[in-house]
Amino acid sequence: MLPVGAALLSLPSCNGLFEGIYDEPVAASEFGFTKVEQATSSGTIYIDATSYTKWTYIDFDTYSIDTTLIAEDGSESGEVMEGWDLAVHRYDTKTNGGSVLETEYTSLDEFRVSGRIPEGEYVEDIWTEDRITIDMSQMMNGVILYAPSWYNPELSKWLNVDTSTMPPVYTMSGRVYVLKTQDGKAAALQLTNYMNDSKVKGFMTIDYVYPVEF
Image (tube, rainbow, N blue to C red; front, side, top):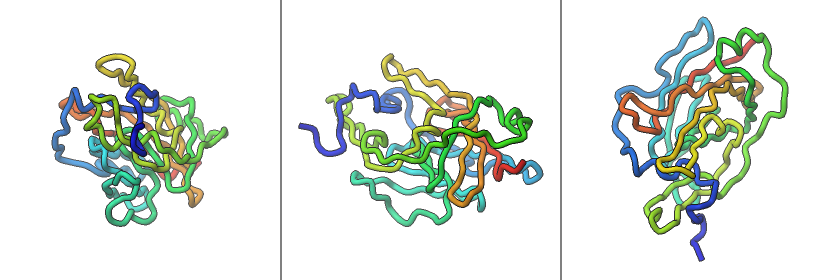
């Protein structure tokens, strides 16, 4: 019987399972809000999400980014910064009491031209014990370890990792996602890259509009 938090490798929930076989994390020079355009309330965020044992927290109001380390029981080292809006673990996401909708738009310019925040079924975070991979050291034995955590299944659609083939196939949705935050504001988000210039996976480039105001 597998230990708590572990699961068989064949389960479909193993998002991003085999990346470590094909690439090793390398340092990058600049992270954070790398581009901010106040006139259009837009910009670009670049984060290092290569680690399986780290959450990266993003606060759009203060242009702040912070990280925590994830323990096996799902607890995190240090204090999570107040006022965060979005957190990223590898390609997984969660919100701070917010909800997300995948839109039909394939660019932020197209979203702006629409002149409206789209209606639809905005998806809140769910509690999961089989999504947040933190340990793949037993991967060759058919076991991986997960940490329990909140998880947003809608925004996490921004990148699909198909592990049914070797090597895995990565496919970005190309869609714009609208995040409604807990305090009633809205952000439009689009994942534009998941690799750095050296093709190492886990370096996430996110374009955004915040706050969305029509």
